[in-house]
Length: 203
Image (spheres, rainbow, N blue to C red):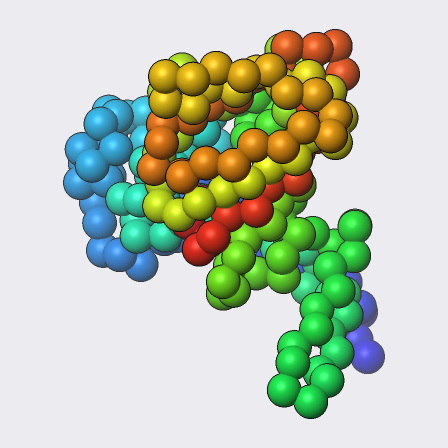
């Protein structure tokens, strides 16, 4: 094996690079996508060059404008190490190791989404969500298709769903239609960890 082959590394695209790649695949110019997302072309250009950080709601708008879910922007783990996959008769069994999850970190807030399901081609999407102290999902509520249920594993989280308001702690769970405008905020001094299931995958 040559030295070049030994040093070959999988390509890891940044969030901005993934957005730009998808936009070009869709044959959209900056101005077209920016108009759909109600942001300026210059701001979108900065996002694509990783010089500006989109909020969660802005990233959701970008995903919708590009015809994908936010999950499309999850970073792939090192392609040289695959998740374990076992096929039993007609059933697919996938093991997603804790250190091999596809991950999306929102640069502006540090909020982290890790995919627990193997990919987005399933009937359900499960995520391990981490909100650092003092962070929130943004002033603009999230709205998307489907239903979701989350259970808090750690921390104290404030949740707004439509006209209702809740404070949840470890062991508390919440279910809602995802079409209800919703947002969350960490009100404690430790990371909030929530496991969320969404069906069908739409975020």
